[in-house]
Structure formats: C-alpha cells, structure tokens
Length: 245
Figure (cartoon, helix red, strand yellow):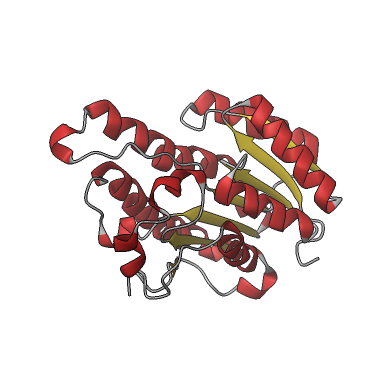
C-alpha cells in the first residue's frame, strides 16, 4: 500500500493506460479521481476500480481542453477529497494522417487535448503542490515525441511538447520538493492500437517483439508516484521494448 492516504487525479482514465494507472494506484492505497470526457464512462470505470480495490474512487466528466471546465472539476475534486497529491496527465487522442492531407483541425484538436489539457490540469495543482512542498506530476508522453512517426506530425508534436513542458515544470517546482516526470510508451495493447497489434512490420521494429500491456505502463507510473522516486525529476522514461534505443 505504498500510496496509502494519497489522492491521485488521472485524466483519460475510463479505459486503456489511464484506467490501468488508476486501478494500480487504488490497489496500492490511493484515493483516485478519474477524469474522462463522458460522465457514464467515468462513473463505470470508477465503480469497477473501487470494487476491485476497496479504495475511494470517483469519476468526473471533464473536457480537459476547456479551462473553465478544468478549473470547475478540480474545485469539486478538492471539495470531495480534501487535496491532491498526484496528477497523471494521460488524456490523449490521435488524428493520424500524412501532413499533406492533415487538416488544421486535425492538428489543433490533438494539440488541444494532449498538450493544452496537460497544461490546464497542471495549473490547477501547481500552487497546491508548491504550498504543500510535495507532489508528483506524471505526464504521458510517447516515443513518437522522441523519434517522430510518419503520419503523426500532430501527435509527435504534442508529445514532444509534453516532454519540453515536463522539464520546464520540473525545474520550476524542484525547490518545492515537487517532481515532474514523463513516461514515453511505445506500442501498448489498447483500443487505440487495436488495428496494429498483429502488424509484423511493427513487431519487427520492437526488439522484445511484443506490445506492452497497460499494466506494465501503470507499474512505472506507480513507481514514479511513490516515495522511492523522490530524487527523480525532469526525466523521460521510455517503456517501449527497446524500440527507440
């Protein structure tokens, strides 16, 4: 129970990596606020995780690109839980196309969710963590933000931006004993990658010859949220089976 008495907020947590992280935190003693775009999906994920862990888990609907909505939901989370100790910026979307055919809206929407959303959520915990002189911010980047990926100019840009923002925040808050790190997954077995999971060309590009499970990403997120990771900040940790080494 290494997160006992901690309160975690995980965005994009109704499925996939976010849900796995929320479940891992709850099983290790944290109370968890799940953010998702839909109220029903957030509530369903929260109920499932609470039943499996015995921890307090609540779901909240929030468009992370909307500054007013983000401010409102964090106000409600503070009212419900009393504080926040851990923030995981996981919400993300893809709109994959070659740049030649990518519309401005395809670019803007990905940047808005993946990068602006993380910025807005981090702003809501920034002063809380600084005043408490403790806190963990974990940003979900991607190997696409490190090595680029054809057809993902928007996604790669958002994740590269996430890496830069992670390092800036880590420097700003280090004197307050607050850490900020990024996780850079490769291919993970989720709904988002369902169309690629049997692609031999992709599997050949991964030295370990398989996709990660969401639980493997969650295990790293658990470590970074724990006291054991107190001297790690500003890092981008790849978890990609060796794909980007």
